[in-house]
Length: 410
Image 1 (spheres, helix red, strand yellow):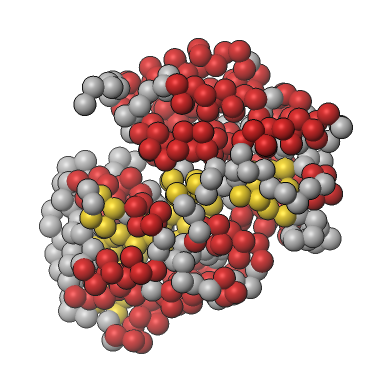
Image 2 (spheres, rainbow, N blue to C red):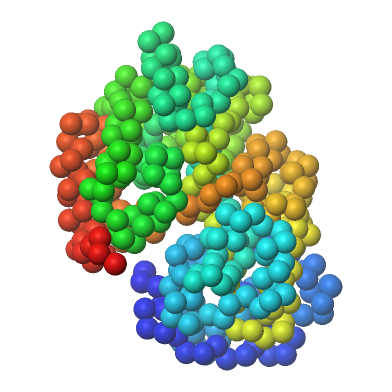
């Protein structure tokens, strides 16, 4: 769906005194986890939190606005929506007290993520990393993480030369390949280029983007893939994690919740012993997803909840909740890592808290038709790495059509 702020929404009508309405996509156990946070806020302040769930946040926000009952706070699943809202003056900046809480409890990478034109607008409350490189120590036979893409490529070459498959890559659906490309792009070109490509302020034919695509074809070359290129293109996500957990490949790139599900199906394979994790070698850069709280007004009750959401105490309530209340990771650096009872989640939390750079998932930010072309192009490059320039030229044409023509002039 199109974001509801293509046309600026009307000014939010203040909610009844002493009530804060919150819109997010969480349901089931995740909703229960957030309600623990909300109930603690209510007990501390006497302010009631009314929670509204909608799997499609953009549609839900538009419906609430049209009904004349806009929420006070919305958890945006895409940080670029924050930029669109802020640039349209549709949301107020964080009040000074909430901004101070943000600065106190979050690393600069996270403050930058929710800042527009030098002003912070939101609280990054829940996140997941897509820069976790899982490995089987019995296959890799080293505990030294690759520090650069050159070292990762060399490791894959050594494994392939001795008959060990380096990577289990689920390429059947296309989108897991975008995670590989995005991590490589961040490592090769940095945050500025990655952010610019998302909004077509740089070209798909720019030298650093071409270099990232070339690295993609080298890392994911046929002999590095479980089943070769053709086998990878037939491999679904769950099949790829199962194969990795069973030891058919040495490494797998992807989300913690996905790996946790795979390990739960193989109880004799333990995280920390049989499966471990490295940071993807991107010099402290992390690609991921995040739910960001933004306020639609500056009512005292709204501000109070925003301040609470920025505190480690609020996040820790969900961190310590039973597993059935959602796989929750907080990027708040003051949530103690030992609050995570699951060592897998603790490892992911450490990476997110310490990230030097955080970039939101690129493909989720692109127009739908461009995302489809990126996925298809990355699939084609597994089969035909020699088609790289042709693929990137086609992506540049789609980006120009969907996002506007790129120009290098100021």
